[in-house]
Image (cartoon, rainbow, N blue to C red; front, side, top):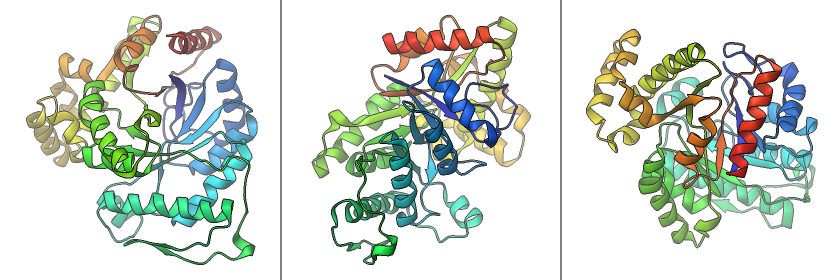
Length: 352
């Protein structure tokens, strides 16, 4: 199992700062080096308040072994050719360490935050991935660019804008997924998928992976090479007092996710559809303070892994090792002792 940290670009950290300290882009260079020293296999960067490609470039330049991934970059606001160029540049800079993780975003954000016309996400992202690959094929192999689909037509590439071949042209693409449709499409056209944190190991095993394998069979892809990368919900700390605070935070997070219609399939699978509907009502009425109290310990422990620094590694392994290839987590570090604990946890998970 590959052990990666997620670098959230809003609150939390790459495992190196206190939970409420926002990302300082000026420290990414040093942070990435510290992650490599601690023993992480990779750094996954989400798109929230900073451009993940810029952060990824800083991390790639600072390191020699650490893999770099977007987790995820939002696809649709960027043209396939623009995304192809960003990924090509990062792959060349990192000497083959880059993974392109893409997400779709919901209709409201596409229309109202990005000012674009909405189209059903599944067919759109399939066309998008295939268009990116067509551009890469043109650059690497000199293939005439002639891609046509319901969403894109690409047939112009002049020498001035052709970066040419690179040493590591096979850039993995991972797609964010929750429901079976997106899982199947990931299997069809991508090299892996990124289940949302509320996708339990059982849900991944019984719903998402079978759908991905159906998609892989449709296009003749090898499901044995299909990656599954997840950032599980974790509450962990050195002391009981700190752990109680983390549990409160995670309970609120589960409540928020439960209220979000886009994640409902992961709750309905476990017989929690009615709870999800009630939470959606509270969310629409902005009764946020009432929502965490509706997540009892049974539901909390279904979706979150909870434990001290000493036992969280084994719990993560026991829960996810049979269904994922990449596990991502970040734990705030306040002292050298925390760094030692984190390094030990990473080594434990890799050995297990």
